[in-house]
Length: 212
Image (cartoon, rainbow, N blue to C red; front, top):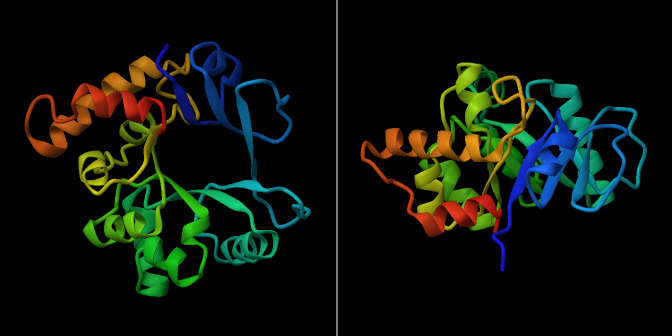
């Protein structure tokens, strides 16, 4: 049986992404729903009810976050939330709420209905809570490195049993939505995290690639 390949968050070059893997979780407004493509709709304050999968690109907009939280609870929706993705965003949340982004989602009562995308600034307490609540983590290695955010603690997440996937995001630093390139980059960031070679073994890499 062929290995499953999932692009867990793609916001550009969706057709290229689909050609290179089995499933794409695509964030867009009007993409055609085809085999192997799951749509998460960008959240706005004017989004009508009935959409079960939404995407929240930032937690720093206080009004948008409040509205999104109400939407998720009212519609029993699931949200892919770009959270703890850089020091600026995490700092804004900390200054405003005295909580990390993950702790804030938990306090708002929606963490269990979220998948976290980015996660560069996750600390051990965040990861423990995500593991406890069964919250998946989508890594965006080339985007996070290219934009200067850093890299997420993938090994720490894996060691806690958190479901981890990988996405090509907006493609600025991976124009062809090449999942193999993304995975190769991930192995280097994992080595940097653990300060050793081969920090992630082959079965773990396959599991990440399958978002399983």
